[in-house]
Length: 409
Image 1 (spheres, rainbow, N blue to C red):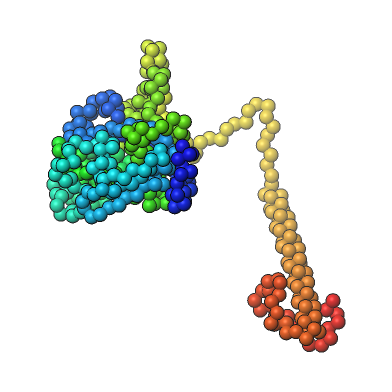
Image 2 (cartoon, rainbow, N blue to C red; image 1 turned 45 degrees about the vertical axis):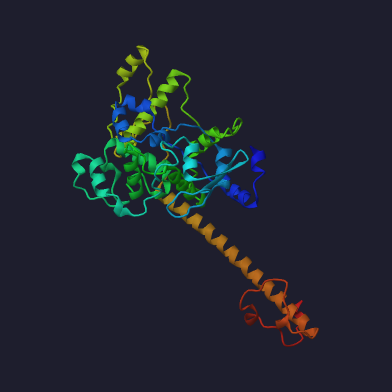
């Protein structure tokens, strides 16, 4: 892969140097195994009707550093209004340059469900008035939040139903990271949720991904997103990424105990995002019975707020038998030690001031000698650039001698 990176031009190499210092964001996708454990797969399938969105949100690919660096270093988005056109997206993967339209870009990711000659799809939310955001928000929020008024980027995501709260978190963290926190529902995210809930495609996903890559590329501090999407592009174009640096991959499927631990961790995370109650922590006896029965016991960490705080008024520990009694220093001895320490500090300050006065006198003698030499040679001391730096007002404080100051040396 270093061979491909060496083929970049000067501008792309400068981008590459900046990209190496940036982190790569974690990418989320819908894990059906988790939703089956939560008995929530029917609700998630009902929330995502679009086949194109289904394939995008379930995309589970590893992330490779070199692929991400090459893609972002060479990515260019040539947007021309609200219409699809050739050369809209340009990038390089595996040393091969690609110049695609939005439809071709989505087709390279297998995200097109209609032909290129079909009616054009929406590229972006150009006017908020053509989208009934209030009515749609009321259709996906909790029953007790129907009367809430939707305010863009201010409405809390906790008002949404669990399945839509999970989708909002996925969009805000993986596909629209610059739109705001996942705790809020932005207008663009609400529009994308509305699009993925329809049976027919209404939005060109190639344009959505192009804008996501653009905002991540022009930033200098945000993490690089959509690593699995870049890997899927490389796979479809036949790029050999064997031997590259793996950043994040799929969940290990080896040892059953390890797989169970990862499943439990993902379950807890999805429950927290969806606002579902966490299962109770089993008691020690239940854990022992589960282990004896052959089950896999996964240790759970108790939240900090659930731990019992230490009592501030706990009784002091009694000394163990045979230990020496504690040493009690009288208050007068403590005050005497503090006074001695203060005297040492004052003596040190006095030595510092004495050294500063000595250096000041030395500087005065050097300046007087220099002025004497200049006057003796018939030169103007004020017009000469001295090789050392003078402090402001030094010449006014120590004027040059007027007579034969032979004692300057």
